[in-house]
Length: 182
Ligand code: IMP
Ligand code: MG
Image (tube, rainbow, N blue to C red; front, side, top):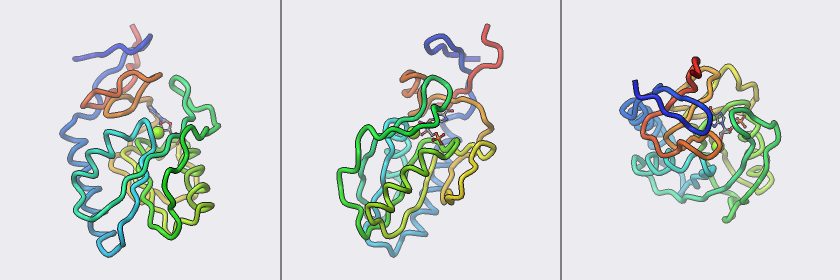
């Protein structure tokens, strides 16, 4: 088993690249269908975690689209601080536009809630939430998650853009924190 070590912790393979690719394809197909008639939706990619998902998703879309990046942070190490900080704000007007938020993972939903508030305040006409991963046992907010490629239990994962204190983003597969850390 190819176990990896990031900082002080061990991680083991959990979701293979081929499975991720299939799930991204399925979400892209749904978005292609749902947003066919919409005039150039904005795909709002949430940095840093979703840069790889965004790149793969965009290449599977056959609708015209605009990509905008925003940077928020709430995690320290392997747990949430509960406070979402805006590190880089919107660089383009979303007024009257359909916006698809592209997230790496929805956990407590604090980040999605904050994004929703920002987009409402800035006058987005329609807001859709798209995430690579959803932790349904952790998510307790009312905001609808329109597209979730994969669902996972409340475990801490890395790879495919996701990090543990900035390490591990480059892996093609997704890894989970190893139960036995020895
Ligand atoms: P939320 O605000 O609690 O929903 O957390 C969302 C953000 O926390 C995500 O966009 C990730 O950046 C980070 N996060 C949540 N769970 C994990 C995980 O298992 N691994 C790595 N980052 C995570
Ligand atoms: Mg994120």
